[in-house]
Length: 438
Image (tube, rainbow, N blue to C red):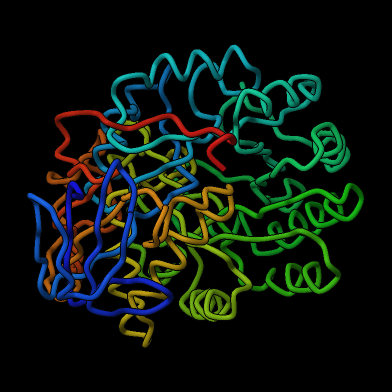
């Protein structure tokens, strides 16, 4: 007897698609059989041609609670995640107050999140100048690794580290994963008041990413540590990552839906909802990022969900100098990427690899991001043929601000299951994830 069986003609399993039946019991996948296999169950759901995907894993989400809950919070962020087919997130150490830079701050954040997470939630710690002595304790408390900025983070309580400080932090915690915002401040320009998008883009050139990636690679070389380049925007920095990997260094990289699908040449005048750091670049750059994904040089696609209040986006003035830099997209990543991926000849299995299995592997969650026996029954019914137009009012994150407003996307999440339970946004069944789950 099993609790639930889900059948589909399009189950993404084993690196491809096939008709299959997935049996679930005790929150786990206990069998992946043929489409017509018979199971003893009281609940057997046939999805027909609606695809069944593993739940996505988003390892780059800024929830901002506590301290800046008016920007976003655990309840709203995780509802949005589930509505987008995401069943596990890893929360960044900022822009919450306090930032997650010591064990007590982690406990404060966990207390704030308790009882209101609709998907599973893990946490990154933060590496800032002077907190080397806190990192081992944070690691032992279960964070999946540590985030560091090489340039101004935008909030004063989370200052950037130098190359030497990054090396010391990596050396302080043997084997920990470090994830790095790779922009070099010496290559960033100043913005004047009432800046346009072109001004903003020019102020954050590709060279800033090149220099910072080189710094991160040097840190990996000097320490033997694991370094992951966050939200890679400049494709011209890819050869540095390729050379590091060829050298045997433990260096990986991610990118985001906005860098793959948006184009600097088509950012409307004053549309500050497109501002993020590093910036959205041109279509040729996006093509190169897609190729790096196909080649495995970029390992995963995650949201960098980084919302704020509408007032901080300065949409009234369209001033890119004053606007907060961040894109809220945890609910839209799957259809955004699927819409573009299928037009480029990629498959649902490719998308699931980039957005589910590989992010799970980055943080060691081998029971997430895949449909296989023994994995958590985190699943998504995804209508890959239907389409919709993005209406910001129907998004679940706290503020209806998105650069995808009015865009027609293909692919609709019909149901998301967390450990075999459909996520409705009413009962919060999410659990805290720690390195013990890895």
